[in-house]
Image 1 (cartoon, rainbow, N blue to C red):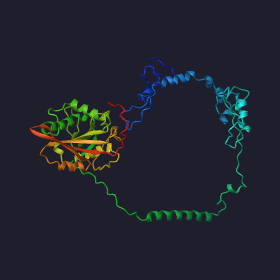
Image 2 (image 1 turned 30 degrees about the vertical axis):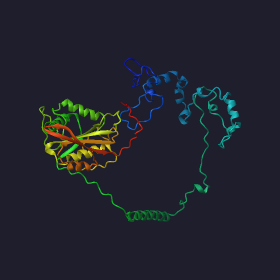
Image 3 (image 1 turned 180 degrees about the vertical axis):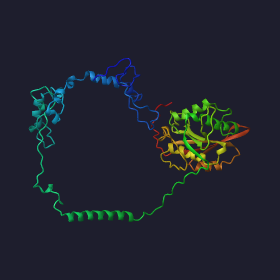
Image 4 (image 1 turned 90 degrees about the vertical axis):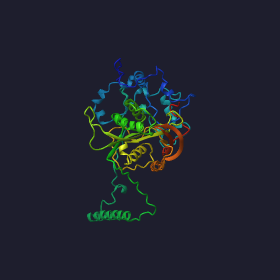
Length: 428
């Protein structure tokens, strides 16, 4: 049935084209400046799914221009007992060609067995009829006559059709079943008794043991006030945050949106127990830590596989293993080769972070600001547990609260495989 369109309906087709009628609009987006096909990208996060913008027009054109002979009413065939018993092949008569290699179909079929090269099959085509001879002669029906099916019966005299144990006595059958059961048990015992292969035993990864009563989950928009309160402490009291003025709610909301829209991990740690109530008398969860990564530069730049880590823990919950839990869960979402340590509760009731991250992450940088006289041994030891190696020490990079600030850079390389010859989907 042809779909009828109107100003309120698209005929059942929900693809809307913005191509201004250009039939090559979608294909051109898959080609480079020279007209060659673009290579498939390594990362698929920036590529939108393919949409045939002209599908509706193509379907309508096909319905309108198709030969309508195959749409004839076949209800009279449904009433015949012959149709109900035997299924026939529907072959429109328009499929029969008028000419085949310059000859009529009948002449071509008669000459086919003698044409070169000879057929590889043993079937003699001279004894076969073309399919158009299957139309009934007395009607214009498009149904072919059913093929003749020979009656197939088993030959009782053929020894291959006899069951080898059909004449076995009842006692013999029971003995045979018992013998098979015994052999099966012997094989199972052999498998259980085989020696343990020698070699080093792979040690189990020790689980993390946070001393704080917390659980982890993906960030939500409602977490913005709690994250702002935590972060603004580091803005006002420490040199760990680069800003001097407290961040507003819209700053935090924009930050959350920038990370989650790219399907990158943004994880928060929540303190269990009695939760505080907001001024609207709604129970709010207490944010005691958060961790996220963002682009080091831009996803269309040469640094498209490199990201910057941000991790903060509430000052009242430091040295309780929360940072390790956050870092452990974050790395498990961006590196398929990372072995999750666990040991903490992870709750995810939404679709965000149900699987891996939406971008290919190869390198994660973390810049640790500190006083120029600080000893970074404990920081290096902490990050070393998660394979963050020290990559540089930038001296006298800044000044805040009367202190000279150095920056030490650590890097983690994931197990993801990248192709450096493939350019970004939307290069700068």
